[in-house]
Image 1 (cartoon, rainbow, N blue to C red):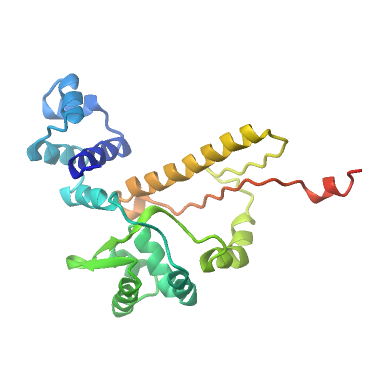
Image 2: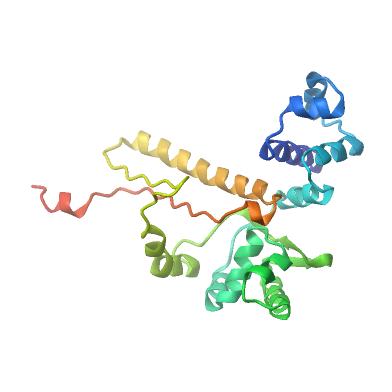
Length: 243
């Protein structure tokens, strides 16, 4: 995908995230809806109109640039030594996770017991690990993709299984927008493959929504946990009573 196509795609995602339609854009630009659709399909959008659409969405142009930057090709997983370094230092892991979730430098310092000198030191270490870059104005640029995955059986996954999985599941999941499903039953091989594809697609959608949400203020974003899993399995109490 060339840069112009990716840039227009970024603008379309920003409109969708902020609840605006082509009709809204047409009204703001004093154009017909058909003209706006053609403008996007032909990728013929002037900088003046892009700025006008950013104004409509109450976004700074730099926010759109950052969203575009985050959509570019990046590494999809870490190396074992990178993950091991993260799990050895809680503060290093906190800064890494905040950076991945698009927190600004000042927001990290404001919300955690991490001083500015500490934050600079930790970010410098993450730069050495080639996970991010610190740019002028304390702007953090990620070098990992939104949909990157922890290594299977790697240091992060082992730490999650040991410390965090039970903590995550020890909840009634009864708050607004909480959801817990337990499903079990026999599926054909084809049905299982279909379900696996859809779960994989959902994980990609989560990554996309994470990227799109990054342009909103931190006060409008709340951390969520999503645990997906599928395998051939039967509860032990059933197995124990099988002939």
